[in-house]
Image (cartoon, rainbow, N blue to C red; front, side, top):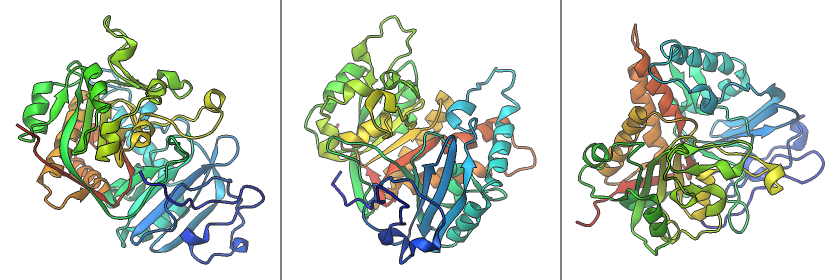
Length: 410
């Protein structure tokens, strides 16, 4: 990822809004004190791009501001973080649990109630919808609020109405990772790893990958070794496996088998901290998109006590740091049934696009299609659950990059 100019905020005093991004605004127009974070986004907004910034401001509080084709937005009020709104914490039930048939509807109700507490934001979003911009959600907090699920209108959600991507304060080898906004193309074949105990490999080969003939490793140790090789023709690295996240311990964040597996070793996982010292040449040389179809793979931890800073770290950040141009990942636990459906829909669509489709748009279409199944008189719980799952999958990266998948060697 090329080094971009940072649009920065002053380090002391009352920060002014960046002129590049928010137009010719005077500091006196705003009463709100913004935190001294850099934005880590290429200088200025590109055409048809909107951005929503979320900052921590005080104990368990957040503030919002942004800009887009229809103008600036600033909420002067500090909001209390709803601690139980994280999808990683709410989506824990599975079929067979006593509460399974009730809680998906309650979850959607919580999102509606939360949306109604952010009326200034909703007003700004409603105005954006008519312009159909790409929306970047730059959430600098540890609160894990599912902003894509906010209801703009009844039956209409941000992630259904707008193509979205995420960004934040994430570090690379030489400093903060900067998001670029220029149109770009990612084209190539698929390589990856599938854990047979998590996903059915034969189903993936037949129904997800079709005739694309990807190079998939069952052994995660062999896959890690492959990442070290100089390979430049990969468009998508796909990982279907178990994921683990701990918001307080970076050493527990990993992709790999369940701990109950008697054969598990340190080398049979992709561990966050260990992997920082590895050079994944395949990712760097290909500049590919990475699809982490694993539990909690899109969650980011802020652990200043461990590493001495408040940057956001996690599996998505790990692959962006290695050189990926974008990462599709999850905000919570993944049930294999829904994870398989998401992989099938996204990879099938990307393989059919001759000119490519922006990743955020692919996810938006998948959410829109899932929503049609619940806009009926009596939606079933499995359809509601899958609709929620489509918001579990988020994209970190350039919102204007397109993905086209090609057939691998025979």
